[in-house]
Image (cartoon, helix red, strand yellow):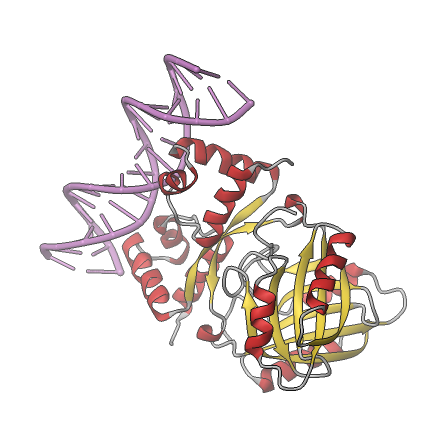
Length: 157
Length: 157
DNA sequence: TATGAAACAACAGAGAC
DNA sequence: GTCTCTGTTGTTTCATA
């Protein structure tokens, strides 16, 4: 995939506000509306853009407790096992296998401490989980493109 | 803020695809298009919806290395100090102060290992940073609403 | 191959009910 | 909440460098 500066600027504009009209974006980057649309279509077809979504404030919706749970698994646990166990929990918003002591890191939102503990217990009770270690988020310092926005740095490497 | 089931279903529909028309969403949830629009407007006014954005595949854009960097700070380091230092780094997509041994956890995307190391060095050289500890993401298991999507569980607590 | 201009269809927005 | 109208926008077609 080769992106040029125009593609990058279009991505920036969409990241800030995906409801901008093609004409608006065109005015920003110096193209006509159809030209912008064609590039956006190409970015989607190539997989760079995977969709359009809404930015939500978790706190405003009642998710006031956030944390990361590291999970340590037994031998012969596959990433698929972990995935299957976690995808049933709606409070889990992200999970990755990682290097280091823990096998995976799980990002969790909960209504409050009591709820967080409940989620922690559900994760800990998964058969492949040997133990967990969790840290709570005190204050979210920075979320590129606001809370829960595209997890990408916004420019090309 | 009080959300009812209709609001929640509208949020779900928008999270999946923010470009759905109000009429489409209305057909999904059993409302007319203007009724959906009014609810979306209210959700924006109340702060539950903070905006609309594009979902991006970091790997497709060349960000193939992801990791978490825990930073340990000196005494009398304020969250603002950390924020100021990190916001200048485009590779940092999220950061939070946390409980536990580390003072903050930083999520970073980089082009490759070499680039990741560079970012790590830049963070480690901040005056308030005493030491860091980083883990690399092996495979992203789960991203609710795909990579880089809203970091919220998708239903109400 | 990428673009701009024009034409059409679909939609958002605002009002009355 | 719905229905209706109007201006705007998305989308396609076509011509062009």
